[in-house]
Length: 106
Image (cartoon, rainbow, N blue to C red; front, side, top):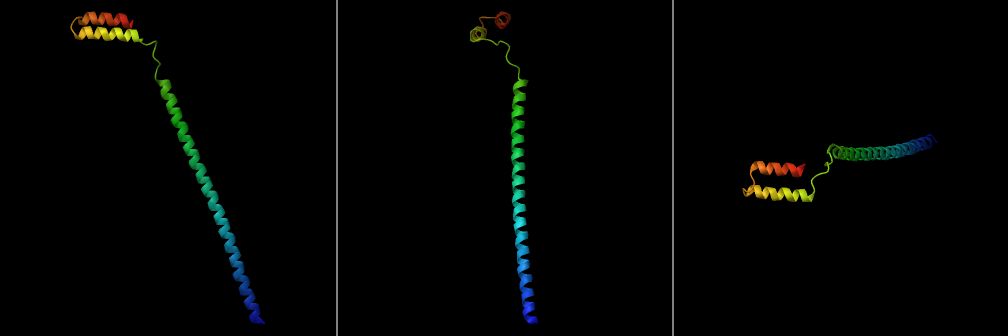
């Protein structure tokens, strides 16, 4: 009878160890999945933050560049082009070109 008792105790010890090991493996697998999910969430948060920073930088650039004040219309550009052509051909002097350019640009 003592031999049977030892075998049962040994069997219980082996079975108990297997149950504990299985529980630990389950816990570690669950913990690993939680860690991966947390890491993925961090990566998503970082990507969102970087995207928001890029959008903020673009908005700041748009605000930093002043809008043209009225600008020069196509008619004014045509006149300047004609004047430049006359100046290049020597028909207008530097002073005449500068005076006409000043009139067009206002």
